[in-house]
Length: 429
Image (cartoon, rainbow, N blue to C red; front, side, top):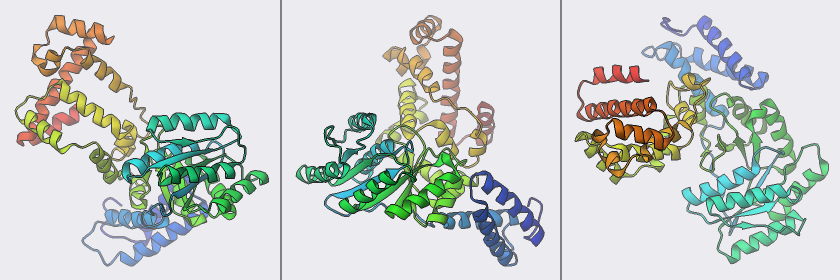
């Protein structure tokens, strides 16, 4: 719509044709994509003579974004934690990531909701699942209830709930065996668990990489256990948005969590408006800021600001900032949240192990060298290269980039030569 001065039937139709193609390519059901674009068309043509001060392209993006968010539920839906203890039943297909999600959810509730969760191992068919949940429980420092002798999941879960009451655990997360919707015995088992436990919340975990099949599976499971919400795992950037769009439309149940990594800190509450922005390539700056705030220390930030203004930023400060970024998640996911960056990083292979190289170089320095970068001479650099397992030119390159960044940060803190600074930063990128 670049160059157009208003919305017309012609440019709206052309835009919607591209949007429909994009939705189908993102695994959105064709029928849903068609109905969606018809609604957008009606809305767009209804507003073409109303907002004359807004550029047609900007108006069209706003209309599409609003409809995408509405299609996915409109707003976030919180998990139900009522009950003493609250019981959360986890269900899903084999290999969908239920056990990993159970651990992520336990960590999330512990860190964000100040809860004392208990993990329950009810996958009695796969010993490795119990071992996996045990490792996860140790990793996130959350207790686990398991019984290697008992083969009745309902019996295990009921005793776990009593154990939780006795030990003041206010949330019980029941990890169940993976099952196929065509396996009648296994479906009967999960139905029995739902009836026997009467959980506060039943979550259906689905691997978003299965695309349109995820929607069919979600619908079949919902007929049997009438779950409360959906969890999308392995959600890679905006390429899996189609499953999120279709599930809410077909099943009518809200998506409550999304997961985009293997580590325990990669679980996010699902926000339809933010997901619609990511699908449109507009990033998700709100989630990015929230992740940053989790690692933000106001006292340290003020201290760092003073050092930058005095041009005293050193390798110790750099290492601290590096570790804070690491805690926020993998780089590709973070960059995808920044408006305009998702397209740039879509087909880019970003190796987070690059941080290891930088860290190794800094940790090979003495305390004096880390605090006073100016003392680094050739002999010191040679020792650092040998100690970190890198070549001399790699150490020189890193130190050069560090000094350039330090200079830029100092200029930015003083608000000087911003145009020159931005052009130099663009060159560095």
